[in-house]
Length: 172
Image (cartoon, helix red, strand yellow):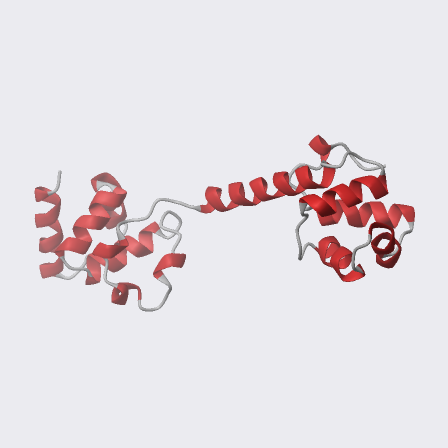
């Protein structure tokens, strides 16, 4: 018996189908022939390589004795969960148009975790950045955060340090 929808929200419908077919000891070919689909389609759904279409949901519903929309709803819940995971990973970033890519020559600037790698980013920009880049980092992280990180860094070269102080005094 297939689980209730609220128990498997966010799970790929193929995983639910896979479990059910194993419990019933059905092969892909058996199910495919009974619903007039290709066995490859069933296998792709079971592996999570393919999603559920409305027509397939209706066919699976009839074959497995559940509501016609059961697998379509599972697909929708799965897609919503996927988007939520992506959105939860998105984080604010500084204005990348104001930062030269060469500052982060050793990494993909779009892959930087701006919060977790804050100390390294601040250090890199303060040591090698121009005035506009330093202002962007000050704006993004805030003066207090940058000052706190600066306190934990060994003294920067004299002229660079005085430039930073000038920026701190003019930035509010």
